[in-house]
Image 1 (cartoon, helix red, strand yellow):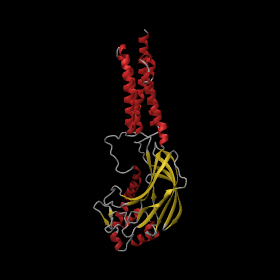
Image 2 (cartoon, helix red, strand yellow):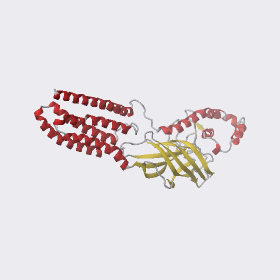
Image 3 (cartoon, one colour):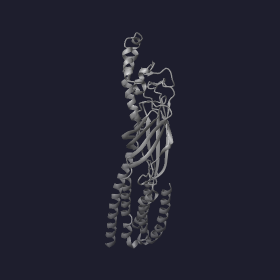
Image 4 (cartoon, rainbow, N blue to C red):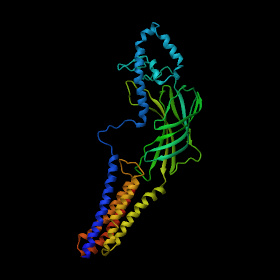
Length: 412
């Protein structure tokens, strides 16, 4: 009766451990499925952060269409001298064109498209927000001195940054600039200098950069800070990266990360067409900060615990069939421990639609423990006189396959 009772206890214990592992595994799988892109949902062609200036300008266009139509209808009266003097006085009272908001450029549009959108008949751009009479666009160099980056949350992809932003030009800039930060929310924008050819701001805000976790825990991330002037197109203002004056402050560090590079560049951003003849580009300055996780931290926080679990599981291969209870304790409990360890890993990173390197490592751990458990179950499936043969085969085959498997998951 001792042998059947022992088998019954081992079977019950293994079933309980497997049930716990299965429940936790299903939970991990559900987290992954939630991150998968849903079918039928249209994918945005532009980042979400860029939608704010687009929508704001579109609202401005919709709001100003009525004014543009009224101006077109009043054109004959202007020739007769009806309301022309009054409108001229209003315009003078508002100052020159540089002091007017972007949507007031609609008043200078000389034509009307078939769709009812004001257009410019002269100049490179037909957009109603263009200014063909401005002349040669001002070339502005943009520099950035980064003094602090903190509170980097890789799960949310957000970080807090404090920096100085400089704008310099050889010719006077437009008198009223509208600087926006598409990838962040600025909490403080303090002007320290405001001259026609030189402007300096101290900026503090929270910015967002989606992480790339394919190589986690040996991942490298890129933090991005973008600056855009969205009221003056490239026909009036062109932004250029001042690489010489884009740098880190002395003794600059990001806690827990190693600095790799600092890159500054500029581009002309083309918005998706919001209306007919929406062909005006806007300048944008982009600062990219490359950071990498410390390798020592990654090894001791992820790889060492995973290999310890595998090694403890393999120790059961040298336990003789006479100590079946001890051998069983090296399988199912370690599988439950591996699932709990995997769960703790994914709690520190966001759900992804792909497997990270840590996920691949844990798949190798699961496969190793599964081979271990299968070799133990074989003792219950064969006759007792064949236990020694199963023991010898499993002691050679399982460690060999585990070694090959772990090497593959670490390299791939």
